[in-house]
Image (cartoon, rainbow, N blue to C red; front, side):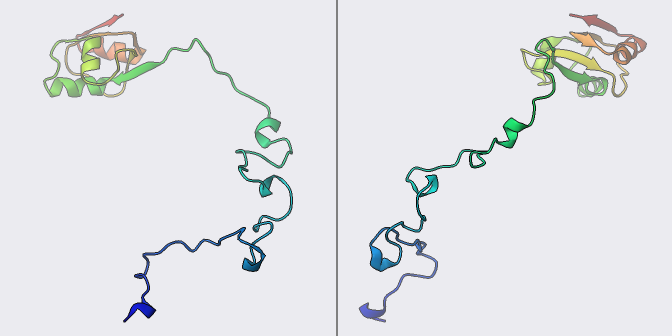
Length: 150
């Protein structure tokens, strides 16, 4: 090996780009492989998402549909089996209020809580929440507890 046959290590050189616009002799001068005229031949061209060459885009051809109720109230759902797990782990004993839900990350401080009826509750609890399903309320009262609506 000497200075006449040095070459970089395999895979270390990535630039295999064609050099365009460097004279007619390069074979890529003139239009620089962009063809003639039109938006695609200009510098700074970038096609907008959904652009269909001037044809009315699909997104604008298809009519809008559906309905979004601006007065809808979203609730963070907490199931009975989750409450029973908290009782089993010794996190709660007799009363469950909003601060307990926030501390255990079952809801954030800005959410409203709805107690749902999945699972079964064996512990006697006084549960305070914004809403209860009928099955959840019945299960809490059947276990000897109390369901208080905020």
